[in-house]
Image (cartoon, rainbow over all chains, first blue to last red; front, side, top):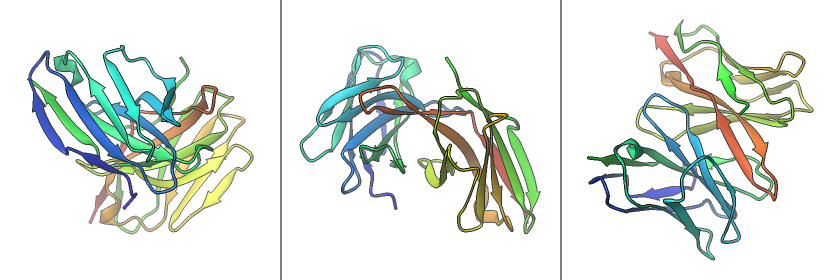
Length: 112
Length: 115
């Protein structure tokens, strides 16, 4: 158990809809990152949050957005869903130093 | 951009043998590397990490070796067990500034243990 919990575990959305995924980080970890993992690929960095602000972003369009709350939990929001957004979305938490980054089990998103 | 990659996409080993999974990286500025194990349908599980000021680190049944001269990482698993069957990723930390720690993953190596 990593202490990183994500919800929901699976969901199906229609193209054009919006989705919100949630993550609770491990106790004591104030940095949360989100990754997208397509089938058969390695995870791709979406963005990172620290102290409720985005402080790093990968090559993802603005329709991917997020929030971090005072208790360090986080949300990933994706607007105007596309078929290619179908993937496993992973949340990772760490201390500020970046040491020992732990992942949750992910949320499987299918866009139809 | 620079990336982390793996030499072999699949590896089959006999139960009880040692496994070696290799990884090449191209960003010479990276100073922190992590190996993850990912079982089917699950998130990546932290195995072991190493910083660039070290060339070897050992854990329980696992050893990571770092060769900075040729930018190469390896994960050695001793006495491989059926439960070790999974996809293994190496990842490097890129500090993109302002305290942001971005992991860059390779495509992974699938390890299959033959009973």
